[in-house]
Image (cartoon, rainbow, N blue to C red; front, side, top):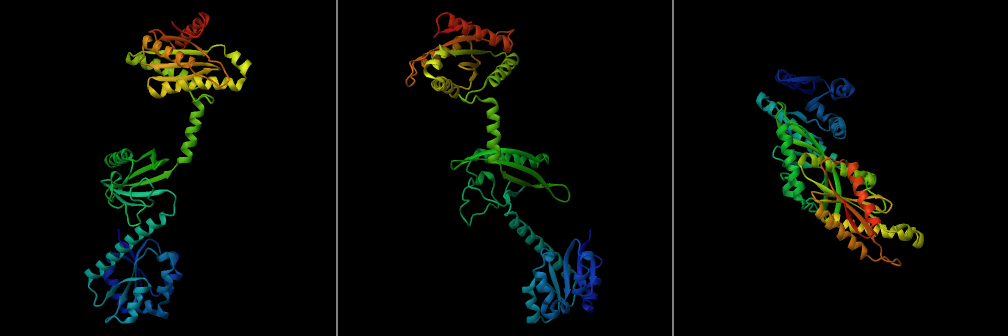
Amino acid sequence: MKKNVILIGKSCSADNLYSILQEDYNIIRVNSTDELIENYENIFKNVNAVVIDYPEAVRNDCEFLKKAQHDGRFAFIPLLMISVTPQDEKQLSCLSYGVVDFIDEPFQEVIIKNRIENAIKIRDSASFYEIERMLKALPSNIYLKDADGRYIFATHYWHHLDHSNNPDWTIRGKTDVDIRKDKENAKMAMEKDMEVIRTGKGDSYIIEINADGILEYFQVYKEPVTDEKGNINGIIGLLNNVTEQEIMKRKLKSAAIIDGLTGLYNRKEIQSQIEKTICESRKTGSTCSVIMLDIDNFKHVNDFYGHKQGDMVIIGLADILKNNQSSSEKFLAGRWGGEEFMLLLHDTEISAATYIAELIRQCFANTTFPDIRPQTISLGVTQLRADDTADSLCIRVDDGLYKAKKQGKNRVCVV
């Protein structure tokens, strides 16, 4: 497709240049700069370069050139001038008004076309850096990488990059592994880059970064960059700081599954976890056990000491369960309701579950509460059976808890 070149002037030089260029370029011919401005809307579309004759360039003390310097319509279009030889001081002054090169007579076709093409490339390059500078005004980090995952540019440097406080430091030519403090996220970023390059499919995900004691979340978008033939030669990306939104989303998600008083799973979530575990056990042949526990004589605590003190006892028991949960991936705890709790133990047989239940019972019995006498709990323990559903498993462990209460409380009953 031919490039569009505006040729301004009506001299013989302009006529000769028109004859040379018309075969390879779509020449838009205008006689004067006044005509160009007057008909701008009609002729100034997808223009790649402007060539102006010397008389028009210097007319009225280079009036047009001076205006074009501050006219956004000419910001990304190279301006060349047909000059006369020898070039005098007046012609050379045009360089300070935006002219990027001269086209000298006698015209040599190869040189002329080369100068026009070089001027277009230089202006395109300048446009690239100008756009990069403008993009820095946006809060998003917009970046470009080559096919090896090396940065060509990035509009922002954040604190999780090494050397980001050095004013002379540049991201150009570096990979994520080269520059990021969190190497695991850096490796993941490069792997995803290579996946986009390999498949030609974009990607979007959220990463968590905890650098310099600052927890942040970023939404990452990546899309392949292709040349005119469709070959993938890089990645264009967008990075948005979504920390506030992500923290709020996680809080809302947490509120839906976490008991507000104890910080443990609520009944709905621990029941859901039991159902999932039973399904997994059917597929893998693994087992699980559950423990149900209840604070003994808790009504007396509320009636005698008050509900605030009662909450302290519940929280004290929850803290014991949390400690067990944080030390074992197999252990999940939830508040079943009131002073009742349900524990789910993955890949745990009844003997180990009974041992854990006894440890929890002893630990709680040895816990002291300000202005309250020591408290105890009763516990029921059972293991998943081949024909169990979540309901039958929970009913059976509840029966075990009831038996522990009936047998005198402060004990573990296996069913």
